[in-house]
Image 1: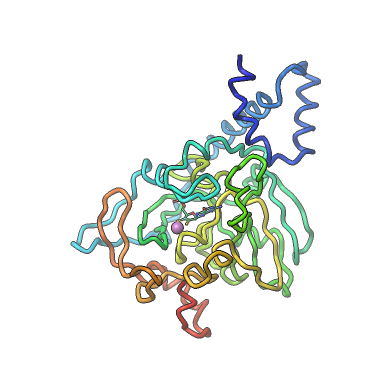
Image 2: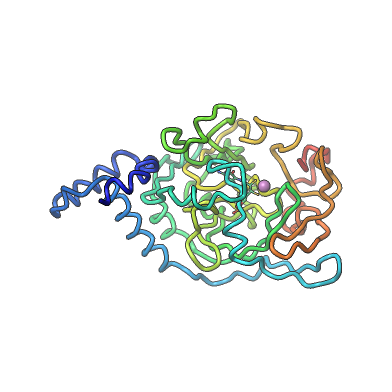
Length: 327
Ligand SMILES: Nc1nc2c(c(=O)[nH]1)N[C@H]1C(S)=C(S)[C@@H](COP(=O)(O)O)O[C@H]1N2
Ligand SMILES: [Mo]
């Protein structure tokens, strides 16, 4: 019967704050569903929320940031196939291969509480589906350039990160925005491996977070974000290597001192804090001069700031142009 068969669902019941879960449960109890299992309840909630999210998309495209480019033989670059975007992923919480879709599908993304803390007007928590009501959703086509020298062109749906800053109003003392992915070692087995500094953590300067390109994606290809791409919300900073674009965010913390990011803690010389794309600064073990489109395997000359120089170069003008800006 259902209960036994779906035991695996229990694996990911986790990230729900106890409080929210208990409320949901008592509501359903009153409706006469007391006998329903925890698992079934949670899947029911998720299914209802999926329906709600499906109806948010597609959203209107913002064409301002679209960049056309040619491959090294002169062919015009097209969008990467949806299939590739959603089947070739980096998401270490679910494994170290690109093929993590099935495992990631077990993650429950509703309810999904996000906390806003630190040096802001007032600390608070909000569910993702309430947050998306408070921002303007739009679609943007961005290039994603992984530090592993592959790239994709992806139509993301979501909203500008600066909209969050408008809501939370960081204090002048706040210098950095720290974002974290869920941490659930009981249910996500990789997070019991203590050689990784879980949870996945990424940091931007407040000026970078305010940059008009910084984007929070909640959808892709005109649909809600699939789990493997970082549902229900992930960062996209297209002028930086892909590892900066943290998935499945649960917290935004505004701080004065910069903490170490996940990759900085593992290997700072290769995957540093700034990680701005630069074809002239090689990774210690390979060239960054070109990137290969996933899907077509066509080669592109990598551009400074991944082609987004006109929007972001001012951020780094006054800084020492050492290699660490580009790793
Ligand atoms: N939480 C989390 N976020 C993450 C990663 C990860 O392993 N865990 N991988 C990063 C890397 S290395 C890349 S290239 C992009 C890949 O995003 P995609 O799978 O949607 O293409 O996600 C980034 N965000
Ligand atoms: Mo990456």
